[in-house]
Length: 224
Ligand SMILES: [Zn+2]
Picture 1 (tube, rainbow, N blue to C red):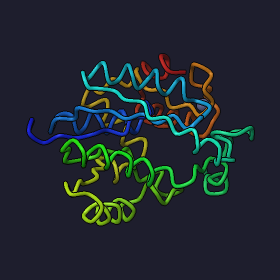
Picture 2: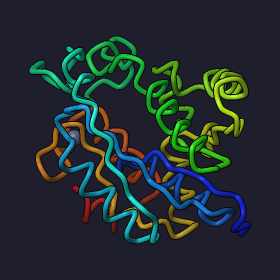
Picture 3: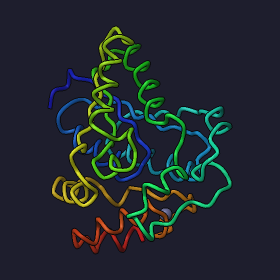
Picture 4: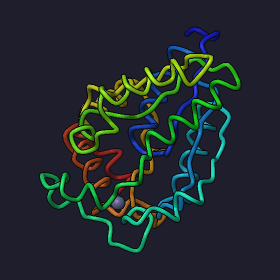
């Protein structure tokens, strides 16, 4: 572990950000976790899960409030519309527009880049992954590369984005987590925000399928 390399993690408490943190904290000094409150239905659960995860790894946790993002987001994650179920993941592309938050990852990375530039952080870690990248363009390798190019100009520090899971699907993410003893019991991946995993929304279904594919009965029992 290289203590001199400082990183920020974008932490929602979901599977991807938890496992990204677990992957990078072995390599360098991940010392600040940022969780964003943009009025999402699951915000209380996300903050609670993120706090537990940050405590587990002994890192500083900061919550960033983005009230204006809530005001302009009209889709199901924030507004009154129904969150799509994960019944038919094949149609995830169609339901994408229902869970889209305007420029979310672009915004979050830029906010984190300000923290990095101000306090001499080298990296920002994000849970972007191949499976989400098939639906969301802001989860792709190209997106990460382009943001890195931007930061070469927009930060003095020339901060870089790390996406350790970018080539993984959810099954591979869970498999990696189990092998590397990442505390999966701490995750909260549900879009609904009912204090527990609903088991029905797209995010829950993806997690459930990945746990099943890994025969991770222990975590299926704890989380669902
Ligand atoms: Zn759910």
